[in-house]
Length: 371
Image (cartoon, rainbow, N blue to C red; front, side, top):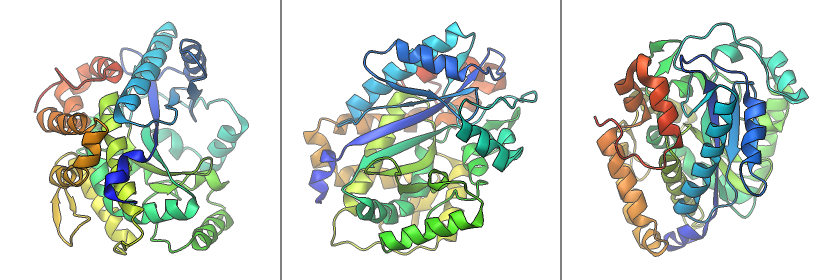
């Protein structure tokens, strides 16, 4: 696929949210909130409870543009936020729960969630996280793995776009994405190795299952992977985005990177997985503006510069799809307001819940706390 064809790829976005009260305490009304939220949206919206009862998840349909992603996410977030209020809760888009929690262990509905909880044990409750997953439609598993080989070089930079979890257990951790550090504790999480074939991937999955560390194929939690349920490559590196607009920006950036991977004439550097992991740590520490590996060279540059070059490479296609101004203006807003972690710190622990509840529903970054 040529770069000019990048906007023909479809995308879908999954988002996870916490339910809290005004003081930041978790509220275990996820299943009820998902059910009420779904009833408030026309059609058959994908809203459902998550692993823990204080969490909910939403997913767009198959989207063809950034504008469609913003529209669908705004509607889904609005429905969930309204339903949460009816349950005495606030819907907040943050990678970690900012405030210290009393003992909280209610597990969501379903035998699989109970099985995972029994298997993983207590550490799961000390590291609850919410992420954003971007799916890009591809032809088959082979294409998904080729895309993953390219995307793994971009994982550190992609962390910075939606870094949105500076607080955990009532403290500022010093990281922009605390979620990243907590999520990496899962035995099958982290950047995938470079894989040469579908057969090699299948052998890897079988070996992971044989260890007993994962219960099924869906617990292969690589930061980028072929989806088990649909013909997509799924990028799972990001905190849940502060706003629908930032989630849509992430989706367009990932889609553009996948488009480059589908150019069959390109080979991708076999950067050691440990180097990718170390660069991800650096990105999680610094957030937007972090100096990360440049996927086009052997050097390191600030993530905003790398994304500016990516957008320039895809500008003709983005202009034709009427997305170029959206992407450029959203990147400029990030430069002005900082990432989600910067905005949370500006609000402080005393004000972060109210700020997050208001921000979660908004499609715009306008009026947010500047640097």
